[in-house]
Image (cartoon, rainbow, N blue to C red; front, side):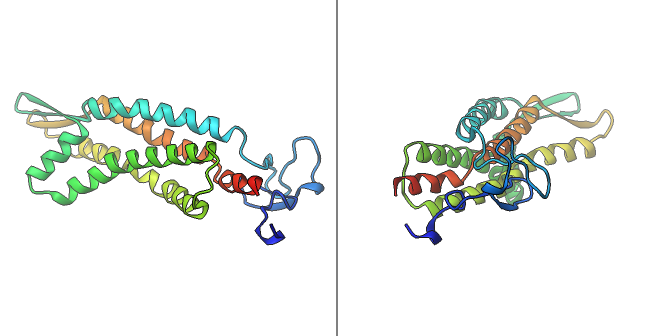
Length: 210
């Protein structure tokens, strides 16, 4: 392996996770090295990356169940109460002809969270199994997952707007259901899981095997 294909770590450099400054490891003190620019603690790789990502990912998967089973909204109209889950809300918008809104909610609240969970599980398993399969594509997949994950909050924003707008006294009103809390927790946990995963370990496995 030539020098150009070696990682920065093998060449004696350490990158800061906060400001992205790259510094030579031999210029840093041996005990708790800190970034000379932002004073953050430097680590060659994120500590306990795989264990933390798994823990957050499993917690998100557990929270995802009540987020889809419990009601997302309660609609009070003319003395009647209607409870809607995420999927029943999608079905309602489809039947009412609002395909665009149904598509946005389905993609942001169902497809994206499930896809993000599946992709992170795949990345973690591939690293633990020391797979050499297409590391560049796996890195790009991680970057995309990290970028689009936050848009899963769209459903929570929709509920918030509806609760604020639909206040017609005794005629009709909408209140957020318990699923909104669980769903918000799922989004936060998956974002933290993606942040905990260090994509550089995908390349470390290949470099170690070489």
